[in-house]
Image (cartoon, one colour):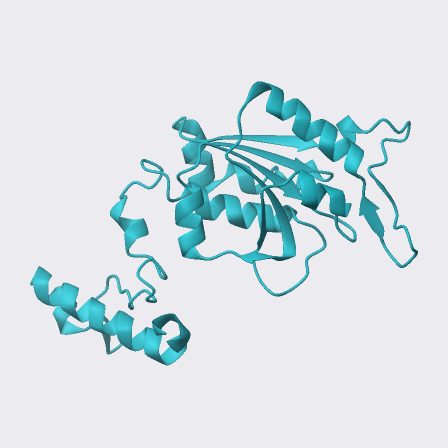
Length: 224
């Protein structure tokens, strides 16, 4: 998978994109991530990428010109499956959406900032709009990191044990069951006997029951 991320704050990606699972996926050659500074595509002598909103009101708006120039340049070299704008009023990200997007080969992520982007960008340049939750961030960079991480970990070969992703919360509309590790008895707090019984079928049954019970209690909406 190739991810091209367009942002006016490229420095924010230096840490998260070079750690843990994301770093290993890049080292394995399974993912390539390219960060594009929107200011590099500005024709303004001060490299401005925003302007006042027509009609007045507080806050600045990202201009269409540098965004269009950047996307057009990228499309000269690659065909993109999706051009995604991260925005609070987009389709809410869930595991099903992440599963589908993880099958794509080339994706552009556009990070909004200030009061967002010129509406013409949304109407004519992007193919999908995604929100990571019902709240507002200072910019789309953190949302882009969340989306990227949720996709990358699903790519075959990224996780050391690919079955791990299949047992994550939300994969079957269920929350994940409780997990335990050694010691089996810590200050009188014991691991359920079934988990150390060695009986795989009964362990699987217990985990399914626990996942269902936890989902009923914490997220009954997932069972609707």
